Amino acid sequence: MEQKELKRNLENRHVQLIAIGGTIGTGLFLGSGKAIQLAGPSIILAYLIVGIACFFVMRALGELLLSKAGYQSFTDIAEDYLGPRAAFVTGWTYWFCWIMTAMADVIAVGVYVRYWFDIPQWIPAIVCLIILLGLNLLTVKLFGELEFWFALIKVITIVALIGIGVVLLVMGFKTEAGTVSVSNLWNHGGIFPNGVSGFLLSFQMVVFAFVGVELVGVSAAETSNPKKNIPSAINKIPLRILFFYVGALIVLLCVNPWTELNAAESPFVKTFSLVGIPIAAGIINFVVLTSAASACNSGMFSTSRILFNLSKKNQGPANFAKLNKNHVPSNALFISTLVLTGGALLSKLVPEQAFGIVTTISAICFIWVWGVILICHVKYKKTRPDLQKKSTFKAPFTPFMNYAVLTLFAAILIIMLFAQSTRTALLLTPVWFILLFALYSYRKRKEKNLRLSA
Image (cartoon, rainbow, N blue to C red; front, side, top):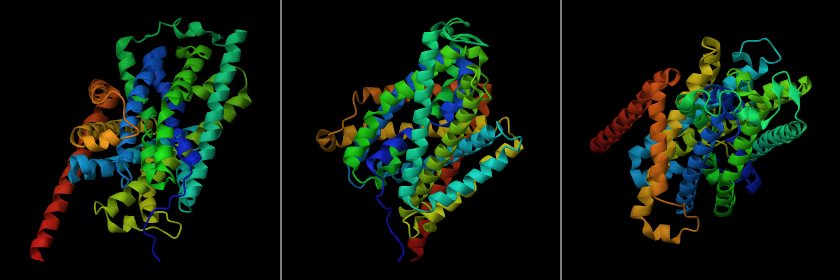
């Protein structure tokens, strides 16, 4: 018999680790190198600002998800508060967001493998996709287990980095780049060595580092106890930001003067190379490789579930709503994986620019999705005071914080317009939205004509 519903096989530990695994990935382990080159030590402040903004987005999403039992993701919320057109555009944009993000992860896999083997970047990218597709076709619980262990490796790595960094600081350890010291944060041109412009230009990559923070919302349909697990995962986000992002970057920049870091390589691998432990650098490269695979795994999970939900609402091809015997949307998974091979193609055609292109497009589209969540929350507060009054997980400082975060996102988009490396992607991305709006109008006209002819 054909399976009709996704199976609720994710436990609390899975949801907690999905929340970590979705956010700690390629953006931090590889993308932070480029961001540090732009901003210097002020990158710490950029991560803190975007991290706080993402926390308020998540609090808004959490309150909305728990306000109605039938919500499975924020596309359902968009339909209720902004209408079916907004739900259609946001749902497909979120799918596109994760396609771009997973492409970045696939590209990163190729970069990391080249640390050991001099082979074209696209080959390990394809191998990674095939392995993850096979694993994702099995059960949702296996996805949860994969993310649990992938995320655990990331956590152990960052804890080890911070621990080793603190020991080196206390010892005043000397590397070929100089003495490990807190003064490295300001001794090489100050906190803002490239001025305010360098600080502002880093925000695109910082936004990309946080993409996936809302994955806990997508996994809401497959958690056994949403009312307990979603608030628990969201409320731990500030501590995770302070420890995994801010803490790790402070240690990195104390060990390495920012001038020693290369935008094309992982600063984590570079740090362990500098302290004279070559085997440790290889181990860390393996860790960041599994991190990229983990984020790609999250991307596959997310994109297939988005297509499944869109199709169930008649906003996508009906075949995507079919589940296999393991309650996995296999057709949706196959088509998402096929599109993801575009990352391997980019690695082959433009290996140097591929990562920058897809991370910029991903950041822009995620800003759209996060903005929709905040706008829906404002409308929820205005139009459903009855639900807001009953809420046991109220988002703080609304609607002021909603407008403040929306203003920040608008400012980041304006900054991207002035940056040469992001301008082209920013100007091309509206084509996606124009196509979606046109497709929605076409579908509605077609449905209307069918009703009239009947």
